[in-house]
Length: 275
Image (cartoon, rainbow, N blue to C red; front, side):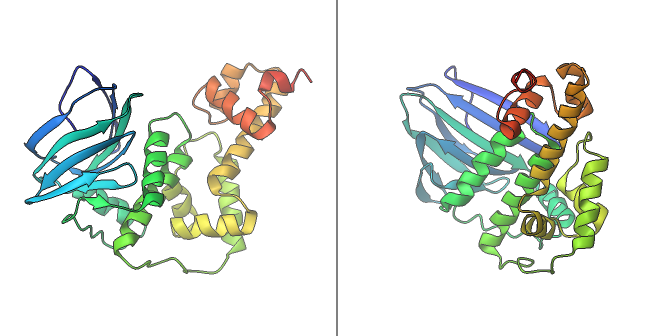
């Protein structure tokens, strides 16, 4: 999003054609960019800062309650208007039009059509979803959580401009939901993604999420996390080390296992088995 500066720390993660950028800016940082462009589509959200920008001869004031969306090759200028005394964070996703086409086809979404004439998308719930998705994507959380949030974000983004195509599609199908549960249980130690799970049972990813939650009261990701903790609890009770249990149960590492265990059981594994 911005030029290199001594008071700005850049973190970049590339995941299957998607590029995540995070800019941590110190208090008092001054950022200015004159007539630049991205080579990919860019979606930007930020906290504790505001920006003056211009493109196509029009001027904009970018605030934390909105997202900024720019097309590949879109010429723009940017200048920091405010950065909090506690510093600020900008989060950015970049991807090619081909990536977006492939993602929509995989998730059975309509052909993507984004309006780039106005870079500001002032819809705070979508902004919060973007920030949560971006934060999750750079974490060591499970693949199903990441892919579910990413798919949900893109679905919500596209349906701001397009009428929902599948919002009311399908009735609850207990047989397919049981297949989904069997798949989660059988491959709980693997990096399961939402598209893979949906493809396995022959159901649209968003219909799957909605029907799973309607039928069970939780999402597929939440079910998977519970089942992983249950399996980890069994192995820990048998005397296995946490460092060995974590990969066996689909956790990124021991700290990930401990956080998930505490969230579901209310205490850490060590505390649970000392009670």
